[in-house]
Image (cartoon, rainbow, N blue to C red; front, side, top):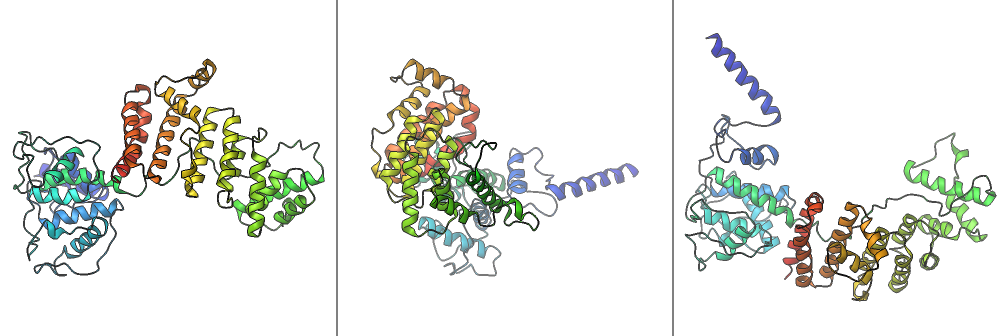
Length: 486
């Protein structure tokens, strides 16, 4: 008797501790879907078990339950938002049904993003929410949310031929590895789905939904990060500075302090310039010789009229032309800061091209090129890019991809001396950024083919295996987005 009480206490303690962190189910410990069930219940909260700590994996799942799971998945992945407007056009569905709001919002979202209705799947006047859902019905629902597959193989289910009326939907899911069928190569479309089987489908479509998010081809990628900072745009020897130098340095330091601190604390006034922009403006008007520095900070923080901003921007760009004195980071800062003010894409392109030509490091050349793409994309002027521009950069990428290109021994040595991560990032960001160009120029099929071939080629590079895994989801997302456009 004492032994039974101790066992009971141990079980109760286990349940209490587990419930606080994650729920356990006593009826799935030896089940084939055990890990998937814990994932959908404890990690992403798509399913719920029963009050007696069971999941009932072999119980059939109903239409309303399965659609609710899909709805939760789409909301979690930022594909759907709550939309409870209108009514469901089924005579057996009203607000008194527990699933009504889920299904109504599911229907509204589906109609918005795909212009389809669940009535194309569940026909007739009645929805029959408590009716078990079949594998065919579940597959058709999932296919509406699935992305464009990167494979194009015919499925090989023995009980479905190529004339099956939902061939396209099943093929799509098959190529996205969302459905795999049974071990005897059957699909069994009319068979009802168990909760365990639905979990596997839900997990697969949940992961595929990630690629429907609007986070791909939304920006230009850079190899290095360029955070906001406050350079002096010159190396000052503090032992030889004059009064104008000291005023300039103090004004820039004050701008930096105000930018990060918000205000100058009482007692610290003597350390900072209360009106740094005014000081910089006076220095500029008195022809202080750090022209880039004064113009940059007045442009960023001063209250200039539109024409004055344009003039300051054009002068800054001209001062950057083939500039070999400023650091690469300083050049990138100025070029990024002039995005919104410059009205002359040709001038911007000429200046950036001159810096690419004079840059010492390969990584710097690529980031300057990416900045140019970023600027032209922002201005809607990608059309001014010429096909033969920056062939040397393309040749570097081709060399890194083991293609035969015409490079000097010195150039090859410099490329080979790059770090492994630098080599990989040059390849991947060059390819992704060029895909962005193709996307904006409506060259969908060509852009897809180029990136897909590069992706397949990169898989053959053993030294890039781990680096590719880190970027793979982004590459797949870009490929799927481009493919969906043609």
